[in-house]
Length: 383
Ligand SMILES: *Cc1c(COP(=O)(O)O)cnc(C)c1O
Image: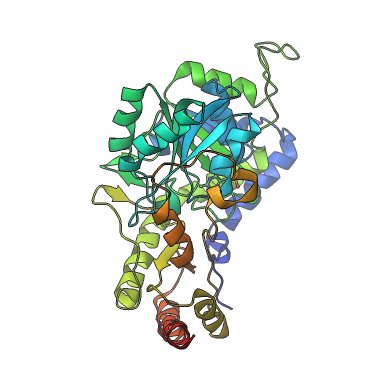
């Protein structure tokens, strides 16, 4: 089977630096908050064009730290797309707050700025005090914060960019990390910039928010050890993972270029078969996923089975929208009904994507997809 994401070719390039870095950590023994942490935070802040980087234990904890810094309280409401990974919405109920599900754009898969008024009124009608918006850079393309930020400002809301998938991308020349007042990312191994375990980070230009998050990731610690300024959690990145990130950052820009090249080659080979992903004119993507839309009426299960028969794995991100998941079913949903979200969940299919995907492999995938879509469409026609 062709791997959906291949981390092996990358590791071969950076293995020496990783081995040396891990040995260094084993020698000095400062596994938690060792010198590697502030070093990687400086590098990441520069890479993201932000004043502060607060590294932490996962992308989900990055969102929780950001919400703690924004002062989120039980009963507050936060607008978030329903077409996203669970963590984007999960962090609100974890803190006693309310996700309000909004519609996405059918082409970019991202929060549709035109749908925000309908989400805001549905949220307010439910009785929640709406305090913010979490946009998501789904599959690697940033959301349109040029439109989201002014709407939020006019309504007195803050904006957080969930860039777990879009770290490394840009909008109008500005990097992800500088598009919203706070940006959260994940270093889960399969993300564009991944470590070899769990990890994450928050980016902000705000000194006060940065201080709160640095405190909250160590139990709300104050200036002195074992004195606490606030309620926090344990949410640190560890020194071993910082070593991995340091090695991967060396080649990250180059890998982003390689990912774009892979995406271009896919578009050449697949555009006549299915709807290939499209970027807004202002956007570059970090291509966390390569997600196509199958033709209407094409049986996706048969497509996936046929692909697998040709050693091509595929995945559905995401089969069920968040507002239709049982733990989330009681939360407010935008008055527009999220029809686009529902349609996308039925049509999307992610193909193998990583910087080291070779043209010959893409030729094989394209051939298999042609056969698979023919099979899926024939079945729909007779079925
Ligand atoms: C992966 C992901 C997260 C969570 O990151 P973890 O490091 O797995 O906690 C949050 N939001 C989105 C959109 C993601 O894809």
